[in-house]
Image 1 (cartoon, rainbow, N blue to C red):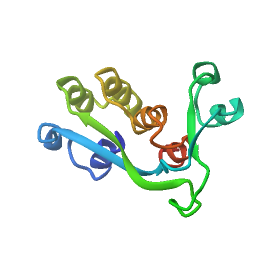
Image 2: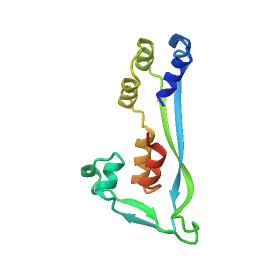
Image 3: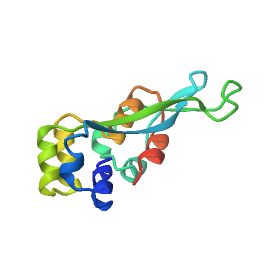
Length: 143
């Protein structure tokens, strides 16, 4: 989402022209929700956790869920959608960082330190609640 700021700069828009007018930037993705009729608890293999960018030591005891597939969900294991959201409020410090030409990594770190949840973080919260699966979150937040 920090890339939005980079896009403004790539379009040759001077930072002082947009930084004071920009209040926040939002990104969203839709993930499929696990069917409540065939939902079951599963343990994620350590290899899958590593491939997903998660530390197996931190997630070894976390319950993951998936749908087995049933008549209600047409055999897919999913029924409905939920949103993953990332909202970056433009704090005074982030505004200063844009004006001084800070890297997107620095700005992202700053936004997270100020309480922003990334799409992946929001996805992990929804995984822990049993709303969606690890595979769905990885598919929509990879890259």
